[in-house]
Image (tube, rainbow, N blue to C red; front, side, top):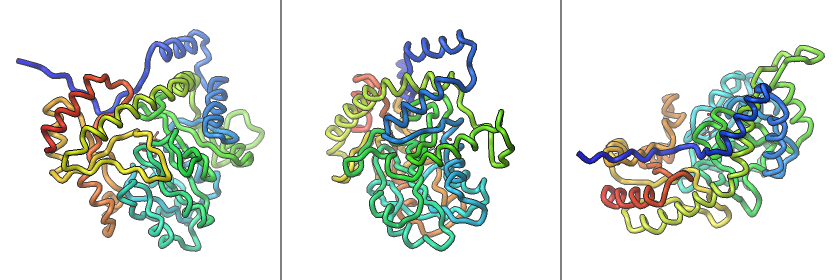
Length: 352
Ligand SMILES: Cc1ncc(COP(=O)(O)O)c(C=O)c1O
């Protein structure tokens, strides 16, 4: 019987460099938060052209700290899209602030600007703007609202909006370095900002140890040098990894163009780095995922469940539509050309 190996939906892009770097940290015995974390923070800030970064244990912790550093407190409102993972809602709920969920622009999967405007009240203190799948949300009209923006770059780094890097627009920017993200440290995250006072506040929030006084909002959200060593290697290979993603995306865009599916659209004022390659299909999504998996291609819904569904809210037509049509196919730098050939052939068979 012929066995086909499953092509995974996502996989970290790790190699000998990372093995050597982590081994060096272990040999040094300095495995906690040390100089490599500082170096990783500065490297990320330099990459985005920002003043500083504060590395933390996850993207969710980064969102939590960004909200606190912006002064969001219990009873304040935070606007966020429905079509996103649970992290923005969780971070907001931890503070006792009120998540105001709005619909998305189905073209880019980003938060819908008109919906944001309609959701703003006197209690709104922040807007969380996730850039989903590798493409920027529409930042310019959101900036005009004069409400602090947290750019959620967990899924998008290296993309441009109006010629400027995504992640360099908001009052705070957060990243996730989870295993399957663009840069992988296993678990990990960062908050970055151009505001020196905010960076200082973020450092106070991240750790309470060896401080002159007790700061009641502090955590232990630290990152370790083991993770930062990985992060530094990942950042070094990031240009290569983006190039590989672009090559694969180019093939998908041309070789899947004749199928009855909606391909990702890239607005003229943005670039896309294809963290995910998301098609909209007309066939039932769960059944398609099962059939493709049976043929050796692991695909996923790109968002597990939109927030409005968790909360039992009605009236999110774009999030609903996208939830029932969006199919994320494998696109990661470790795919071989043969893997990509196989994915294209099987999608051509299954989605015709
Ligand atoms: C858009 C977005 N924001 C935040 C997060 C949270 O990151 P983490 O898993 O590192 O807590 C994720 C992770 O899935 C994400 O996709």
